[in-house]
Image 1 (cartoon, rainbow, N blue to C red):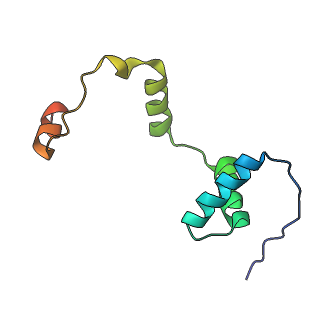
Image 2 (image 1 turned 120 degrees about the vertical axis):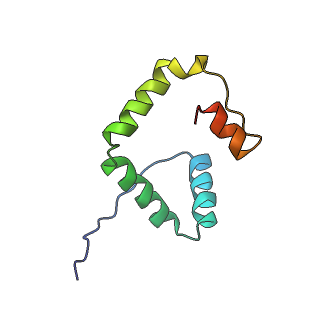
Length: 84
């Protein structure tokens, strides 16, 4: 079994941020340390794939602002508004 080496490190964070992180960790029934570690691992190692990057660029460009809103009143209406 591989055991990950860990090191203690101190960070100075705003009290409001720490309280918010504690609330979010509690919602997931996790320790503050585990919750923050998971967030940092995701931020440090998550690399979006090409499809996600293209969608992000499309959203940032504003190209989607001129499209009609989807009709979410029913599944059939949503599919029709999507052109399916």
